[in-house]
Amino acid sequence: MTPNSLYPVNPQRLVYDVVIVGGAMIGASVAWHLASNPDFQGRVLVVERDPSYKNSGTAHTNSCVRQQFSNAINVEISRYAAEFMRDFPKHMNDAEAPEIHLHSFGYMYLAANDTAAAVLQKNQQVQTACGAATRLYSREELAVAFPFYHLDDIVLGSHNPVDEGYFDGNTMFDWWRRKARQLGVEFICNSVVSMGRTGDRVQTVTLASGQEISVGIVVNASGTRAAQTARMAGLDVPIEPRKRYTYVFEAQNPLPCDLPLTVDPSGVHVRTDGRYYMAGSPPAGDDPAVDPDDFTQDHSLWEEKVWPAIAHRIPQFEALRLIQSWAGNYAYNTLDQNAIVGPHPEIGNFLFVNGFSGHGFQQSPAMGRGISEWVIYGGYRTLDLSMFSMNRVLEGISFLEVAII
Image (tube, rainbow, N blue to C red; front, side):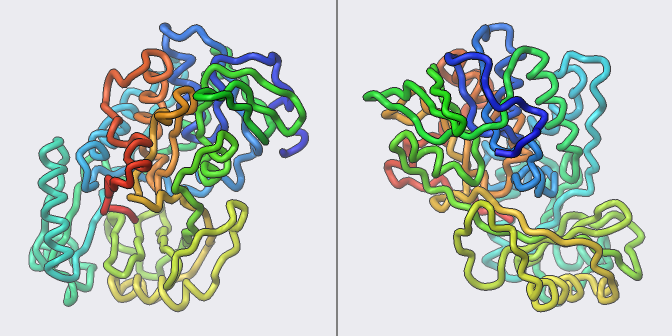
C-alpha cells in the first residue's frame, strides 16, 4: 500500500455487494458502469494497492485502439470503444466532460511472406464483415501510398485509417473514477490478502489492514496480479506478467505525414506520437514471465533490435535521438492471448475481467459494461462476451487471437 494517498485506507463498511480487486482502467470502468446504471442500487468497494498507478498497466499503456483483430468479437469491442469516445460527454451525463479525441492514423500490419499475407487477408474479411474499413495494399500500392517504407521484403500491407489510432485514455480513466466516486463507489488504498470461501461462494475478503469484508460478488480486475488474486479463492488462471518495452524518439528527418502504427514483421512497432515517434517491442528471444513489480529495462534491446528494425523499415529514421524509454508488463493469457471474462463456473460470485494481453485499455469500455450487466442482470445484454468465459480455460479450448502486438 502507498501511504498518504488520495484514497482512505479503511472502508466505511464491512459489507459490500461488489468488491472490485484492482482500481486501474478495467476496475474503474466496471465501477462506473455499475454505479451509473439506474438498475443497480448496491454498494461497491474498489480496493487499489497503489492509487498513484505508477506501476500499473494503465500508466504504461500506449493508449491506442484498433479494429484489426482476427476474432469478430474483438472487432466489435473496439468499434464500441470508438463509439463510446465519440459520445463521451453523453455517456458521462455531464456537460463538463471533455471530448475524447481519437487521432486516427490507423494501424499498418506488414506481411513478409505469403503465409503472413494469408493471415492478413483472412483477418480483413472478418473485420470488414463487422463494418471495419480495413484495406489491403500490395507492395506496389504501398510504395505509392506510403513511399517512406522500405518494401523489398514486404508482400502485403493491411491498413485501417478509420477509428484506429491514439486516444486520451487517461482522461477517460480519470472521469470514470471521478464519476464513480460521486455516485457512491468507495475507492480505498489497500490490498486484498486472502478470501474466505465456503463451497461455491466467496464469503469474505480480508484486507492488508486487517478488516474482513463480507462480499456479494468479487470482481478480479487486478491486471498482472490476476493469478495471485484468483489463488486466494482457490482458483487457477493462465495469466502472467510479460515484459514489453516502449521508446520515444525524435527523427532528424521527420516524415511529412502521420505514421500509422506500423507492425513490422520483426515484432517491432512504431507510430506517430505528436512531434515525436513511439516504438515498442517484446524482448529479444525468450518471452518469460516476470515479477509484477519488475520494470527493469534491457538497454541493449534498443541498439540491437528496435532501432535497426525501425531504420530498415523507414530509412529516414536512420538518424534519430532517443528521448525516453520504459518497460511495462502485459497481463498475458498464455492459453490464447484473449481476455478471460465472467464468473467461474464453480464459484458463481467470483468474476474475472483479466488477461487482455496488451489490449485492455481499448477494451475497457465494453468490458466494464459487460461485467456490470452480469452483476446486475445475471447475463450479457449488449455484446455477448460468453466466448471469453472461464469454461474454455477449464476445458483447455483455445479461443486464439492472432493479431497480438
